[in-house]
Image 1: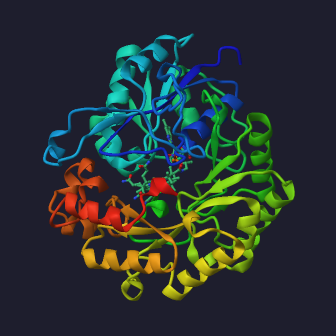
Image 2: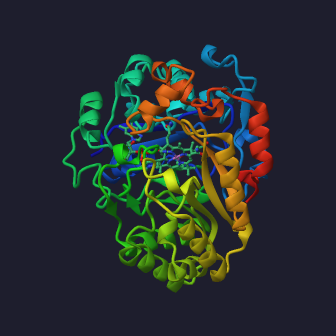
Image 3: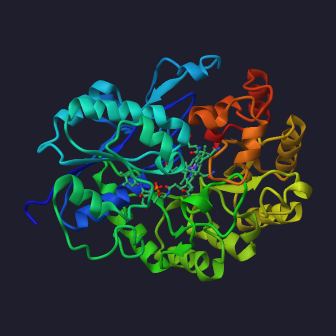
Length: 449
Ligand code: B12
């Protein structure tokens, strides 16, 4: 074991017109970190999105229950986005801080694993990789994560990584063997999520909130969502294990804010969410739970809503997506108007205040009119809930992708940059300040609740 390699995990910068930390942590990368560490590998973590970097001074005064703004530095726009009249920025720590952090790594790593998230954030990934190459020349570097999986050919052609991995970590030990020569007899498969330890969030400088993933996959196949491609099968963590993890993060690190990353937390609630919530209530801990990835509306009945309230759910987001209830069959199969209103009524009766409930509304779908969006916002507001616009990003490998490509004035397939939702990629008029301002006025910005 003592010749075990040193592996560096890197959460890269984001380049975008806007980005905000809505409880966003590199869950997958830190899961692989936990597996490596569990087998004796020494693991370092460098987080380009660290909001509490010591060089930043002054801490993180704008933190709101864990979420908050990243440090941002305006940078030149990529040529393809030059016509968008908005400031483009690098979100995350200053390059010189990253340089200093990499120089301080002792001993230097034998292998670097870089993760990736949004497809159109790839310039931030590439800039991070270029910096890693300069500071740690000769160290093999592997890229994985969501962009790598959704745009594998693009990543292979342009990222500068030695290898681009498109699986969920299954080939981790092969990579370690190939690049470091170190062999191990694994006790479980690296992507055996049920056997592996929880993600190594303790590698962060400070643990201020914890993302929870209690189920993987989603039984629905919504046309705009890549979940079915990324996680084709449904799996669940035993609820007792989830509660034990929550208790441990709370006791050891004082964490009170937990954000659910599940795509389908409430599906088949009787066998998962309800016992989980009951166990959280029994633990009698004073915690706050957030659902930034949205909940399925149909699953919220009186019992579930009451348990959510008693367990400490704090900011609720509902996956409404559209109120064109009659012609949504080709989009998703999630909800009717009646079900939406009923779910909201259950939540309010359980004790949630309207300002704590938000409904995501997809904006910028192919063929969607401005009037449909405004009508959706009106329905949501009339129900006493905060409309939260979720600007549509076309995603390869989803069933809506061909329609998005056809509707867009851009050549979406040519470059993932063009799928950035900030440029309204499927609107014939393209980006418009006027539209954006009108929508902002109609909705309460996400940051306010
Ligand atoms: C949780 C989540 C979020 C969280 C943040 C998560 C984060 N880590 O930052 C929140 C709720 C904040 C969020 C927000 C958004 N999200 Co989101 N999100 C997800 C979700 C549901 C899960 C991601 C996740 O953590 N998975 C769990 C871990 C285990 O998986 P993983 O990170 O992929 O890692 C595994 C592998 O990839 C691999 N791996 C990872 N890194 C590496 C590295 C190496 C070297 C190797 C070998 C392997 C490897 O191994 C890991 C273990 O299995 C996905 C859908 C999905 N099912 O994946 C959408 C998804 C990524 N989000 C999406 C979208 C659109 C958004 C929003 C833009 C929504 C909106 N319109 O507002 C926002 C924008 C975020 C922002 N900050 O501005 C899209 C991506 C679109 C795109 N173009 O890329 C997805 C795919 C959902 C969809 N609609 O299809 N999101």
